[in-house]
Length: 232
Image (tube, rainbow, N blue to C red; front, side, top):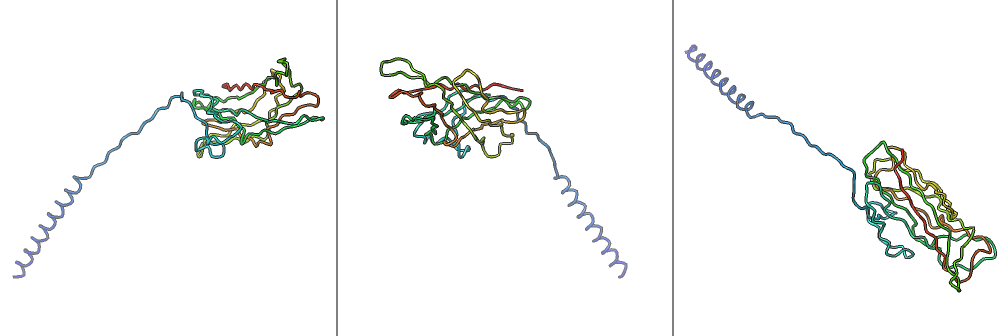
C-alpha cells in the first residue's frame, strides 16, 4: 500500500511538472520585442512671419496702436526677415524757443525679426539709417528740419516661450539724418534664432529738435531704412 501511494504521488508530481513546463514554454513563445525609428529633416524656413504681440510673443499682434493703425507687417519672407517695424509718430507740438525733446506717441514702438536659417554658425546684424525730416511750407517749398536726432534707447529683446536660442544684443540708436548706418540688434553665432522683438517704452523713443529749426504748419517726415544681413 505504501508503494502504491508513493507511485501515485510520484506520478502526480511528474504530471504536474509536465503541465508547468508546458505553461512556461507557451508564455515564452508569445514574448516579442521590436525597435523602430522616428526621423525628421529640416530645411530653411521661407514663409512670412506675421507680427506678434510684443508683450506676449506667443500670441498674434492685437493691432491696438492708435498711432500706427493698419500696420500688418512687412510681408517679407524668410529665412532671414524683418517682419515688422513701427511707424513712429511724435504728434503735433508747439514750437519751442529752446531745444526740445519729444516722446513717441506709439503704444509700444518695436522691430520684429526672424531667423529660420537653422545655421548655428551664422549670426546676423540689423542696422538702420534715417533721412532728414523734410516737408513743404505754405508756398510748397521744400524745407528741412535741421539738426534733429531720433533716438531709440533701452530696448528689450523678447521671444516666444521655450526658445532655446540666446538673445541678440540690443544697442541704443541715434539717427541724425545722415547716411551712416547704426546697429540696432546683433546676433552672434548660435544666437538670435527664431522670432525676436526689440521693443521700447514710448518714453525711450525720442526726437530732439534744436531751437530755430521748426516752421509753422509743416508736416515733417523722415524715412527710416532697416537692413538685416547675415553676419559671422
